Amino acid sequence: MTRFLRNDAVNPQEMIEQAALRTAGRSADRHILAIQDTTVVRSSGGGGLYLHAVIGVDADDGAIIGAVHGQFLSRDQGKRGTQRARPIEEKESYRWLEGADRAAQVCAAARHITVIADRESDIYEAFTRRPANVDLVIRASKDRSFGKEPSLFSMADALPVAANLAFTLPAKPGRKERDTQLAIRFSAVTLPHPKNGIYKNAPDGVCLYLVDVRESAPPHGEAPVHWRLLTTYQVSDARQAAQIIALYRRRWVIEQLFRTLKTQGFDIEALRIEDEVPLSNLVMAAFVAAVIVQQLVHARDGAPADGALRPIEDAFEPSDRPLLEAFCAKLEGSTARQKNPHPKGSLAYAAWVCARLGGWTGYYGKPGPIVMLDGWQQFQAAKRGVALLLTAIDNV
Image 1 (tube, rainbow, N blue to C red):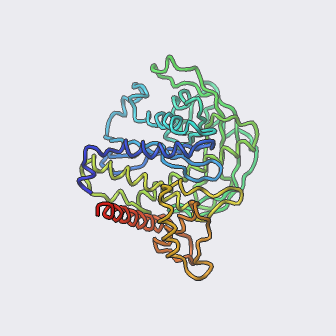
Image 2: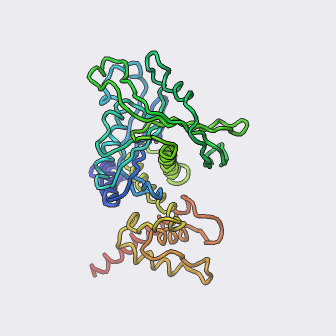
Image 3: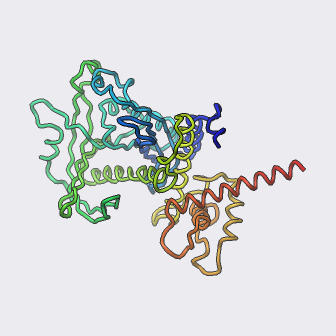
């Protein structure tokens, strides 16, 4: 493994490009959500190594289609004082524009593309330079000034409530799941360009829509939910505002993916590889694999009420089917709950097999990322064993 990771022919760019090539084929005629975010690989003082990732998600059922883009950032301290005077291409924040551009290229065959990102991507150029086939839903972080008029956030506070939305807030570390009510406000806005000399040739302003959503009555001691979303979609009524909120909620998928990459699966933060080159190779391979694990977790329950089963080719090669079916025949028991309830050729069928290989009995709870990862690794080991056996037979 050490020799492989240090081989000059192995590089993370080639890995992600091959993964993106498979994603491109699965994107055709779908509305793809290109969700991007940055996570820490290794922290060192004020800097460290970071992974910026973009994944493709089906807007209709929330299933991960595949990896779209990934790049590493070696971050060190300093440069903050000169940030405003530098063009966007020379800043780390340019990665958000690169992620949108890459999504437009990889998912070019999609019916539509929506890039979704959190507050760090609230950049003027992200809106003015978005690809022609891409819309944006971005959480606002900057309280922009409109001159003599109220600022962006003050304007949002003064908007009338257009509707109240019943909402289930998912659990996360330190917070339990809870049902709550969200008040929705919305308005058209024109963001002025930043007051900086490097923007002298930029458009005078960019027309967007603001959707403000906040928790009406949070439990005592809990921080209220409050999202200010900037979007290129037109928002003319509460129904359209609710659709924007629903799109942004899909961003949670990449948070779950990062948990699988870290403590809930591959535990990349525990790696003790000092050299950045082999570390980057291993982390990118783990990222591509974590996407597959999350695809299996999403597929485990079968088809949604109003949707169809995902095909097995979302996460496996067509040639994997015979081995999956052989494992299924061996793992199925005599009772109904020990039978694979999903049709052959579906990703749900493969997820059931991987869950059983990972130790799930079929009786209690739902298999999570760690179980799916263990089962998927066992399947991959068996696949390699079969390949070696066939090679040996051919050489006889």
